[in-house]
Amino acid sequence: NALNFLLMFVFIGSCYFVIDFIKNNTLQGHLIYDNNIEPFYIKSTYTSKKDEVSIVTHLTIDRIDSLIYMAKRWKGPITSVIFVKDYRKEITKIKTIIKEKYELNAILKKYVDIHLYVAEPFNKVYQANTLRNIGMYYAPTRYIIMLDVDFIGDVNMRANINRDIVPIYKSIKNQEPNFVFVIPSFEIIYHQIKPPETKEEMVHLYLQGFSNQVHELKERIAHQSTQYNKWAKIIIDEEKLSDQPCVEYPKKNQVLRNDINYCYFETEYSYMFEPYVVIDKTYSPKYSELFQGYGNDKTSYTYELMAKKTKFYVYLKSFLVHLHHDDADWNQKLSQSQDLSFIRWTHFIELVNTKYNIDYHPPEWFITLCKSNTCELNPDWIINE
Image (cartoon, rainbow, N blue to C red; front, side):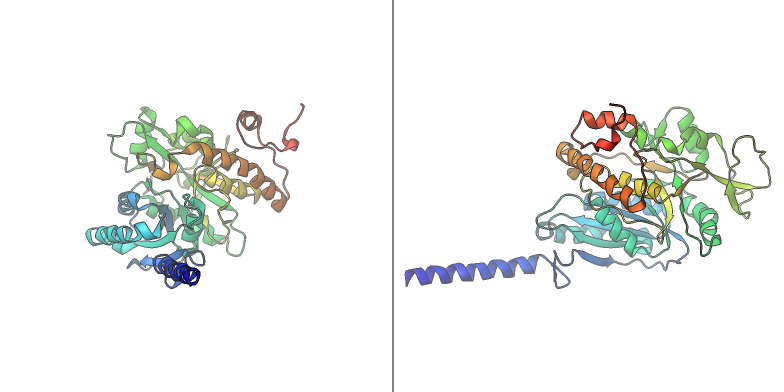
């Protein structure tokens, strides 16, 4: 009898545990490992056009003020996905903060959709590429620019892109839109300087040494193909000829004309390139969810674009500025996550090379870096040894 009573007690306790788990870990009636997404927790009032550009971004709730800043600069549709690390502990607080911010900021109500993504109980690492894929799926427009939430554009970026870039995509009609437009991204060295609003202001800061390419000290290789010096030297009057079609800036030895709206130049892909780009969603690959936490999440996306034989055009009229902030909680312990990301990187590029039937070998500097770290080397990469 005592044994039966004990078994009954354990059984009833287990039932209560399961009921409590389901109650506290469901979204719209689905277990979180069946459906981790609460789509359109907040729906904006703005009605987007399919053929305009929208921003897609991702964040944790502590970055919501950056989302507000982004919306104030962009003044257009934004799809945001908020990462919920622990539904049971965080969701009430998160929803309260969101509602308070929306009540106080009309710009959020008008332009920003918010979707919630809940981490699996067994994997609470920040999953940037999963969030990006969710955001791309729910984005209301065909053309998007995928940004981290701590970036803002110049005050004219939305108007410029919709006027110059969208017509280029629309003009190719049934052809494959195998090109993207890189928006140069900068950081301000002295944080007390107000983020510039126009290209003229940005170029002034850059030439004076008060700004540089984003993450220049720790990730110079990631953005050097943007060709910042060339971008800064080509000054474009945004208003003049704005009614003319946007065309490529002349290559060397070609004559410049005053009656043409030059607004981009082509650049070459370089290894570990990770620019922020305007892209047609129908052409975009998914972000590889193999990468979680810190490292190679955006780099892997650009690598696949290269493998698809994508052309990279640097847009001349607009720019992005990185807003300074402390490292996020999920980015505090870099060693394990970063090491794992490079182990996964070698496997990822082998998969992509096979998928697109390309034979792209990493440069020598990367092979040297690999040898001194934990990433696995493909024997085919090592030449003349």
